[in-house]
Image 1 (cartoon, each protein chain N blue to C red):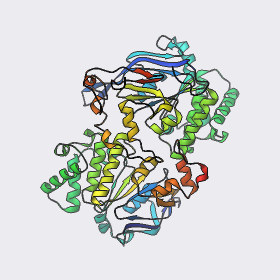
Image 2 (cartoon, rainbow over the protein chains, first blue to last red):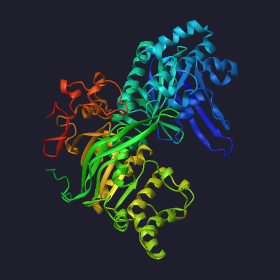
Image 3 (cartoon, chains in turn red, cyan):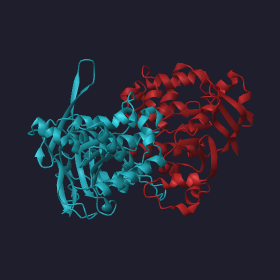
Image 4 (cartoon, rainbow over the protein chains, first blue to last red):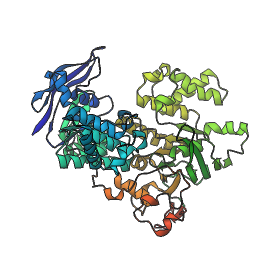
Length: 265
Length: 329
């Protein structure tokens, strides 16, 4: 079942009227991990910001629509959008150190979300926050509730970010390069956590990365971006073994020791 | 002895560190400091014409080791040798004459190139500092260096911000090559670049090494790039070298448990095997205290009783393959 659909999304920079996203279309199915692959500046992150209604000032949606459970997000009022953002669609970003608030404890940051979106009282929010921390595999959650972000290691911080993103039990999680800043051992643990949440909770995930190994490991289907356009969509296995677009092939060939050769397309 | 990878690699030692220790002080509060060792007794030789990859996770001391090889940082203990001479004992003049022979390329070309001067001047600066050279001769050499890294002369009058990331890294490479170095320390030269550009730079490095017989110290956290580029790999963990082996032996010999861990968590897009999550235990930490025994023992799967008390030495288990682990000796 389709849960989110981006249709013909075109985003323009008002200043120099350059087109940043051109006629982008793809859909996300319920319980699926959809990978978005592309190089820097190809519009991967911009798409995720558009889905959340957080496009930077000066960028305008020229045409297209984003349907979430059949509703066009662009027709929502700011208040309605607020109810979806962070509650039903949430996001985790690359560097947890910059996306967490350094002067609030981990506990305060989770409770903030619970109070704002679900109207929980302090006590039940505290209990729920501890549950969330243990769900994402943070040892001694009671103790960690009172820790500040800088007191946690990189892997723990990213787990805390995931706990905040999961606080309202979202249906869609956008993960924007969540493991790029992590060491390989920690990266694998975070990926595995996301896979587990996908299977246990039926969480649908949009996973943005430029890392081919990570993409192959986590994604069910892949959307390939090139200069603001979607140039290929397909099952992960198929994209890796038989890419149809020559740019996809050149991406795959850029992997050191890639078994593919130029005749594959 | 070391296997010959390509004919011109020989036993001539270009640079060497012997039992190098580096103590760093880290501020932990407003007034308190903690000392820790970024390097703890590292000895390593670089042979002529080889690519020696230094592989490790963040905080293992690989960048510090690179800077010590470059002479940019002084070790707290131990000796650094360039072409057989300890750089501590060199006269200022002698040091200056050897300086051009050991050059560096850093991770992020945006921060390693001066944004206020044109590419022409960026490339002329190392020449004018190291040699007395005329403008014409300088321009000729700059042209040659650009050709080596496949850049057109059009970039000469550009500022760094006008170039793409890949072009900038080529400029950084040209700046190092223009002095005709014998040893190039490459500190994650591709990790700030896009995938397709990364491959181009790696291939360029491969080509340059073969045509100019330069030795590389290639610092990386990626097993795949190490496998692709290196002729020899040294694996570091918490300030120590835990294993050294010829690159083609990667994955084919009994490795140090830490190398095995790195191999087991490596995600290969074209050979997707289920990685072994149970192999991951704990997280790497900083070596604040003088660690007793093997630095990897708290995270190791197959530790013996003496691992926590005795520190294993690097022992040659087969030709060119050194491991510091009681299990493997």
